[in-house]
Amino acid sequence: MMFDERMAKTQMGHFLVLTCLPIPMTVIAFVWFPPTVSNLIEFGLFWFLTLVGVICGSHRLLSHKSFVPVKPLKQLLVVLASMGGQGPPVVWAAFHRRHHQLTDKEGDPHTPALHDMKLKGVFHAAFGWMRRHE
Image 1 (cartoon, one colour):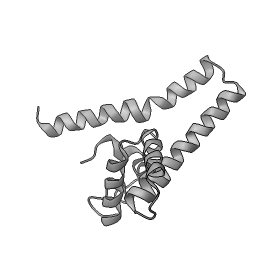
Image 2 (cartoon, helix red, strand yellow; image 1 turned 135 degrees about the horizontal axis):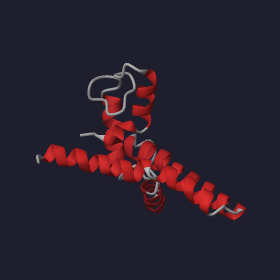
Image 3 (tube, one colour; image 1 turned 180 degrees about the vertical axis):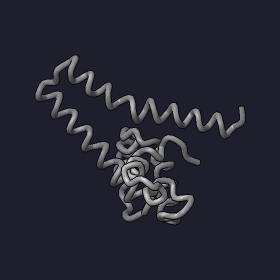
Image 4 (cartoon, helix red, strand yellow; image 1 turned 90 degrees about the vertical axis):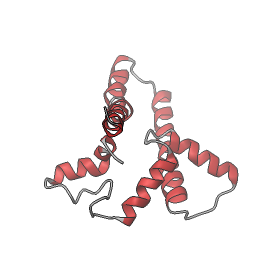
């Protein structure tokens, strides 16, 4: 088996386990163990914190270098981004930079424009691109 085939299988495994599997597992957990109000608050709080980590940490800080935080804040944002389940923040930033360099052209890792069906393009842009990438 060549490296590319192994890498593709590894990426698909990561995509299934880290991106797809948590969705039904969360639903099952909510049905099996009905959440209390405090559980829902914790769920919402951690969802919000990881969202801040991805948006402010991976996107604005690492991809665009749009601000220079003090070191503890930078570390916190990168940790929160890591908790977002979208891969290492530095890799996320590299893909985002490539996206800006090649917007809607061949080589753009998550453009919806290169797909003939609009729904397929939206799926690809949102998270389908994580199935297989360079």
